[in-house]
Length: 370
Ligand code: ADP
Image (tube, rainbow, N blue to C red):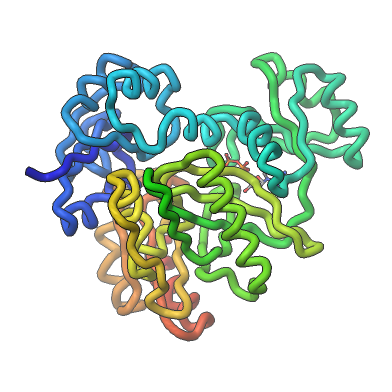
């Protein structure tokens, strides 16, 4: 009998867990929000992840529950734990990926480097933060933000009034950063930890566009610091599974933590083709408390470029031939999602020994989907 992993959420992250699950003889079950999800290749139930009853009915049929996203409410997570169901990462860890205020408070206790920040509940709170930080701040809703939604730059306290009406907010200094980095780590319940190299991610319109692994020109000290930060968070928060730590590299050469994702992350997709053990295989290993695989890179450089959707009705698979002709060694990943402008519908990864060539190959393949 195969071991059964239940994944809540049927997006591309759940989908990309399927190939390593096949290899490892793991039976993947998915709780998707609707029919025809990207992960529908796996045995899929359709249900509402907000519903304690629907999630429990799904979870009782599997050996361990994990996630494609971080939005499952705490009461649902805790109901599973109360029934003795193995949930990885657990609610006590996931909380810090669900709520940016809780995350800032906890990481401060761990003594980790972060932008200056404050919890604000009134316009006066915002005004005093702006006064102390050159008149500018980055306002964030603690919960529910993604791809830049729930983040805005404010230069006048009154501009925070509409969001404050909905409840307390996080405000941060506007970090003067030269680039964004990400450090992924996997940890299993036995406490084993495996780290991938720190990567550079380029965002366009607050959406990840391109990832280079390893981050070009990163010093050994900085790479060690990024790794140490991720390890400290994984251990300090008792994270099980994959954790991605998004970082800013400041113009004066420091790194500070932006935010956390407790699941495989877009900045780790390159590992499918570029590493001995991908983030998706490692996530399965970690949540099952199996020994973790080696994370060495297969080639000195990998570049991943996201494919964003174009007009509705434009099918990605029709362009795969052209992309292959443009760059035969580049690996193409189609999430089988309906195209919509700006939607992440796939990615490509090129690997090799010369960064310029690798980047050109990845971009040439991705350009066929523009
Ligand atoms: P999301 O939850 O939408 O991913 P983030 O907190 O990552 O939100 O913010 C989205 C983007 O906004 C970041 O990728 C970065 O470019 C910018 N940003 C966020 N926080 C700051 C900050 N404190 N200083 C400067 N830029 C920021």
